[in-house]
Image (cartoon, protein in one colour):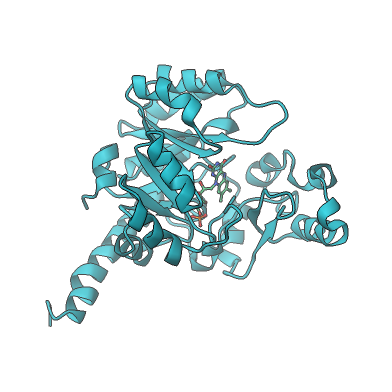
Length: 327
Ligand SMILES: Cc1cc2nc3c(=O)[nH]c(=O)nc-3n(C[C@H](O)[C@H](O)[C@H](O)COP(=O)(O)O)c2cc1C
């Protein structure tokens, strides 16, 4: 399939694996890129720019295809060494960066100067337009159903994507709730040039995370995610578990008085315990409503070729028959 996104990034299929904390290691990114999609290493999972440089080198040994790095700009008291991470990306010869969180404007000149293409993840049309105006090459439009941080506008993709299509000139991919060939065809119909998946890629053989997490995703339904940290205006969609229940209870009791410190035990530094050790109640972790559409744990290659096969069948057979092109 050829779209503006496959052309922009030099990939075979218009499928991107979004940055995922403690999931987006070299193994994950390489598996997606080797299968013809675009894999992304999650920059901040590597504690220092030096470790990111090593992870990039490791990924390069696992794939000859294009891959990228996600760099998330978080609200933090002591911000990570972003200039250092940018340097590691540039010196590592990475040509694609997915930015997320805050406005990446400050770092664009350095990236552009080295021919790095930037796709910024946005949860609203206004932020997407801002990304376009500052020179981003593409955007990843993340709807309300997404795993992770959906923003505070609560606009689902059935509205958000066509709205983005009405306003944007740069290409965009649909993110949030994407799982299969149906998602891809729908995303294309709504104006996107491809799709970005997070949660779905966690339930693959190559995802370098504990089997307990993969099993939990297969077991979960579309009703099993919760929104936490709303009152902190840092909303996150997570899989329901004992820690999440505790957070919600505190949010209910403390209301607007809730401070980050009140829930630090449930959200701070919990990812390794979940993703590496498989302790499913250790804390809150991002998960999309799309869990309801995850029924198996295929290899990344099987998943991507299944998606592309389904998309072809929907377009060439189901839709073509409906408009009388086929009998
Ligand atoms: C476990 C997990 C961790 C994530 N970590 C990050 C992150 O560090 N930075 C980021 O920009 N997005 C992060 N995301 C969001 C994904 O990149 C992607 O936008 C989102 O998962 C899309 O929605 P979906 O899960 O419905 O596919 C994370 C998502 C998940 C499920």
